Image (cartoon, rainbow over the protein chains, first blue to last red):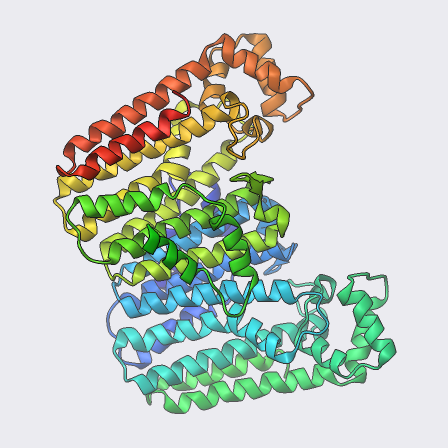
Length: 312
Length: 312
């Protein structure tokens, strides 16, 4: 990971436009968990990979992630990220859009270097699927008819696609058997889904967890996440009118967030969302049955526990 | 070009998020000139290339271009493009940012298919340089101390980088000699610079040309383009105060655009900008001396004439 971090710092520079490393450093140095690049390193290593390509692909994955964060914060009009003011707030939306584009381009440049066309295809496809998931989320926002199926399409795109790609490139560059590649892909997919469900749970159930996100952001943005989708499915007519007003029409007043939380509690949907997150963590761990017998297998199982720890 | 257009239409679809092809079609079907993909096709053909990769790379180039247009219009808060309302106006900034990201990712996916690592490197580098040029333009905006050197850095990044890359991948996939690659690169670079200078000229000197851009947009956005940089360099104290107020501080009132145009006329900077555009068209044509002896050489020389025709 030290080599990955060094590479990230080397490649985020720009001779001509000093604002680029300023904005990037603000986000990169805020200390993200670097889960995705660690997954790439672990996946490559446990498949016996001994070259250097996994370092570059891990840095690529983190660059893609950082680019999407910059753009997400513009789209969501977010004010806080990783406990700091967002780049769109400190600089402006324009800088976040353009620096995000720069990081995308640098990510692609970096992933070309190892010269593995299959890994390139995986990461380029994942980038398209991420954007697709974000657009789907945008068009589903404020639509209280959104189904769980749509929700899973959204999070598989916006979050799980990069987790699964981060895993998949490991066995691919190691030349591992297809069954191993599929198992590690499935682990990343399940872990990514679990990760996003946890995030969506915490937006209603994570009071004061010091994560640098504000409680109720999703509610205010009219995002249809799992706890709300399930509460709407169980709603009576009065409750339905409440969701239609606050999320469908975006007309929110003081006390509405409390009322929303009360409805989630009444229908037990935070608890069932928590259970769904635990299920996906379990699926991630089970996928490891198809992974090589290697000490890192236990590490990845621990990572699944770590991801759900916040709701457990 | 028909095959390129078909490929573009095939690859801009999205099963999950119908908004993606809607937004993309709005821009793609508005009938851009497709100069960049034509350059790739011509460059490959004149170097004797006989495969299919040039079609995919040409579509890649147009996708990258379209993605940057979507993001540019967000950054510039533009209201018109190719004679139509912009996507950020018809939908919203969020859609433009995310659909642009999708098109970037699809561009990279498409350019992986021919499997030529050198072409991949060229196009990934060009994408980073484009974003760098845009960021540099953003940070130079409203700075009336901006030099011609900075201006050329900006336009070489935001515009010429894709023109030169579009040319360069042609000889690269054809396996042409280095001298030919350098000549065609130089042609694209000079033509791109010429193209942008013409654009910047027309923003002050192109009244009612039906291009779908509004006269004076650059002035209102505080962009330091060549006619203005030269007028500021020649300004007396009163004129300097005018530029400082209108561009430096962005305090503009009725009649200021007319006054700006009068100052450009007084110092002859529209005429000298026009002359500079013609010089770069000349350099583009001269670069063709190093191109293969092929009928398309005359076509590319005509293209240089076509680009400056609007100021000539």
